Length: 169
Image (cartoon, rainbow, N blue to C red; front, side, top):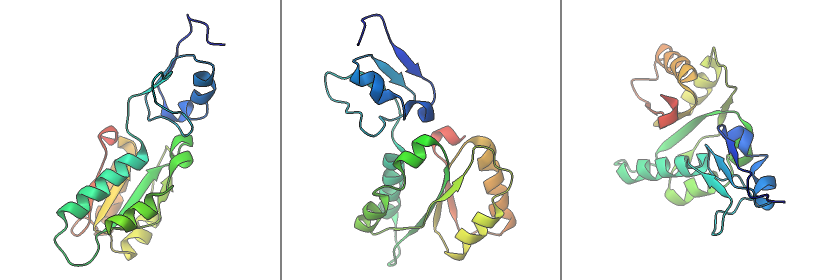
């Protein structure tokens, strides 16, 4: 195991999640365009090199920012529209519900979407009923456009603030 001339690179987080640990256990260096999958310890010496923050970290940091800038006496309400991949399902929602409670943020149940999205009106209407203050659109650009159009059509863009991570543009 761990021949000195082998290196693995995953350009997709969903591909990396189920595979990285088996390579790092064999001491084969792995580079991946994703955070470290569960079970891969990034301590020195390491053989796994991730270049992105996890969905959990992104969502937690966003909720922390929302709470830190919140001016009202009630808890802010945050919803998440999440792309459904092996990576996101392996990680989410995980302990985000507990972290949200600790922060004093109401985190709505996640709404999951496949890669190809043509209509989000059912999910958008379901979330609208819960009156979110913020909606995190954790998806790719084409789906984000559909989500924002559906939100506008349902009259949500006047009240709800939307945020899209950097990879969603």
